[in-house]
Amino acid sequence: MTKSTHFGYKTVSEDDKVHEVAKVFHSVASKYDVMNDLMSGGLHRIWKTFTIAQAGVRPGFKVLDIAGGTGDLSKAFAKQAGPSGEVWLTDINESMLRVGRDRLLNKGLVTPTLLCDAEKLPFPDNYFDRVSVAFGLRNMTHKDQALAEMRRVLKPGGKLLVLEFSKVAAPLQKPYDLYSFSVLPWLGQRIANDSESYRYLAES
Image (spheres, rainbow, N blue to C red):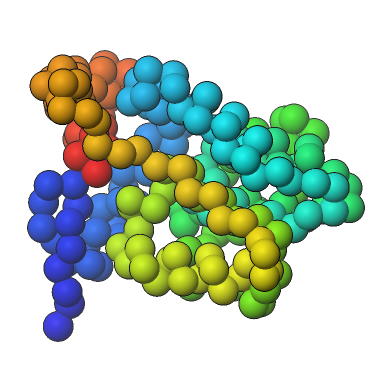
């Protein structure tokens, strides 16, 4: 019997969530960075810069970027790790991965890209110096399993970096809800002709 889980505010089967999340990201891939700007007021760029600084990637490091999407973190990590390093851009969504791969190539960065599930990472134990996941953990069906996999592939003393949205402070809740559940889907419809995907991303 298939277990149930959450897809935004809906209760769905685990199998259905996988398919629904895939549909969302196939739909928004080409507008993903615009979407993040809208959802965070552009702050996601500052948060990513902070994450990159905290990672402390050095030449020769092996880095795994999970749910790497359009490649913002991979781009920075690849420059820091240099030709002696190894930076893998991975995502479970082919549309997102294609956007990230093309963006890296356009920047002259040739790094391995892989379509894979964070809950079943195809890498050996203790392989990476750093593992990152930015705005991706909330979309995973079995978060505990994904985190266990991230820990498995990290070297002893390695660092896992998780960048994610959190609940807002109480005084900001009403304006945040108004923007997230009314304005954002409207913008999604205007910009990407897809209000429902943006509604899910706000709910998640």
